[in-house]
Length: 427
Image (tube, rainbow, N blue to C red):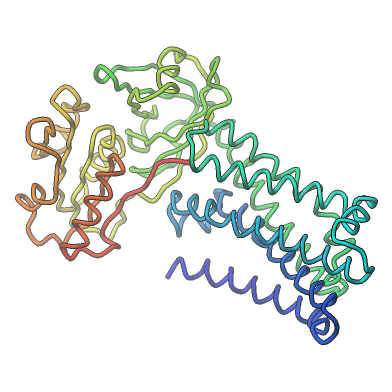
């Protein structure tokens, strides 16, 4: 039901765009082919810009979206939605140039050369090249292991492309001869811009200025996992829900330009925040070496819907490896709630378990599973403890293969999709 509100407004926007386009350009379909190409070029241009606005809404941290759709799904939608946007921009260029060349009797390339003589159309062509380059780089990024920060800074060129191309819409767009449609278009763009700037940047600045986040200490949990305790001003008033995550940017040498998502392993209302990290790659190794008490932190969040809502009365919590971090936060939040729960924690061997003392205090009946000796944790292990699987909600955090295996097994066992909760903590 909550997602349907997003779909409703999305379709309402499309209907308004097609109505405005048809009102102003529909008559072109009754004339020659050049006019038809012009009408098609116009609608693809409108759809391209509408798609760009949707892209900003998807990654804008706007509560209307993040409260209805999980952060990882919004990110995936943003990724999949980018290719149609680039295609619409390209089709807009092809149809408009073909139409103009038909009207003037020139070749496609001659007409393009003529467009490049004028500022607005020249800027539009520069924007086209930028969008095509960004689209290509994004495709390559999805296929190879390019560093996120490198891809991110290239992605910032989208802002440049939009600024460069925006003027030609209003100056040359035939559909904007209608005052109402022009007002709608400007209002829509301004509304998205304000929402994006406010929630993506201003709210972030306000939160970080208010709390002045700083590294308090770093504690080794085992040979390759450690917890970072973050203090600051009025930390106990920093709002997040157990199970959520945030993006953390540590303002230390070599780390300043990198932001990475980590789950909170603490609960709200404490005087310090805690995140727990496993040493898995170059970034985490550098983090271990550079982090010292006093290093400033910028926190972008909280994000995610990996939370246990009030109606849930029976829950099974399943953690694999470092996936225990949001699970321990969930467990701590359930301490005084009347909820039937079972918790399973899998790791390769005993040395890889962390928080054991804290976990045993929170959940004395917690089930530890060592995969090196008894194989991977499976639904059969869960069924040996939990009867009537379909009565429970399942909260799973661990490696992606583990998530996929449990999701498939639970669905096959008759558990509904709405009872299976997991989230990919990434950007």
